[in-house]
Image (cartoon, helix red, strand yellow):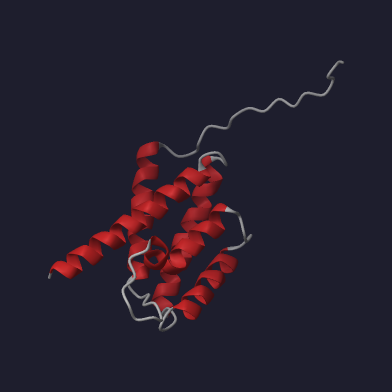
Length: 143
């Protein structure tokens, strides 16, 4: 049996270096942590599961990883809807603007790093935000 049609793929190098990427990811994680300061779950209790701590941001990151929408508005609308449904109140306009900025930056990064690195980057942001949230919860509980 002879194969006459072979697809040759070449790996595209990232358009962003590691140092620059690390700085951008740290800022994104920090901004998502700030966004989550406005999120209070409807239950009113402080849940300590990762799912509860991450709130709408966890859903946003999952949607970004799976390429759920094709526009920034789709991701922002989806996240705001989740925030409103599971939170005591919806996000402020300032929070929505921050969420939009983060989403734009993430989608820009996605075009620069290649598809094979994208899930790793989302996972890194996910756990970085989780760490920042846990840190603030622990520090808040010690005061």
